[in-house]
Amino acid sequence: ASIGTGLGMRHVLPPEQARKVVSVIGDSTFVHSGITGLVEMAYNRPATGHVVVILDNGTTAMTGLQEHPGTGRKLDHSPAPQLSLEKLGKAVGMDRVVLFDPLKQKGEFRPLMEQALESGELVLIIVRQPCILAFKKIKEHQAAAPV
Image 1 (tube, rainbow, N blue to C red):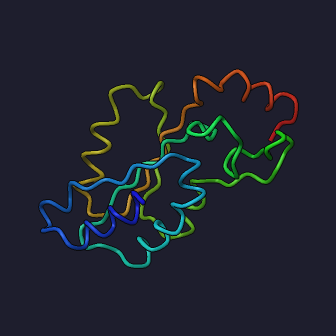
Image 2: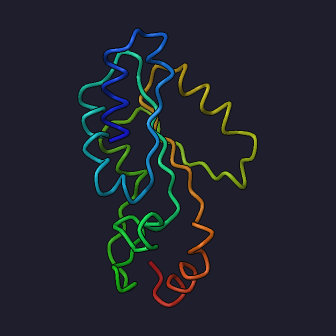
């Protein structure tokens, strides 16, 4: 609900308050219930733009480290078509899609977020780093059956 709620807030709040609203969602939740919000955002753009942050850890950490369409693997870990969050963002009409690695780009997130909030654009920031709890298993699955 974070994307739809954020979009609604961007439409009804005074502009100076609306510009502070950011939608944050995990990769699995985005795939299962956030895509429609992103499509609606591009279709029904708020005057202040909007920023969506997807926390992509490569698994469904919330419910037991299952695979999802963004991992490129089925529940049995066999290969499957992989949904590209970046391509999806561009396809629905986001003005800017940014891939961000928090380990390699330390100290760069705050300026990125400030610029995105000030831009008035639709900005999708994908913060990608494998789940520390699933990292070893993810690497094993990738080695056994590369995506």
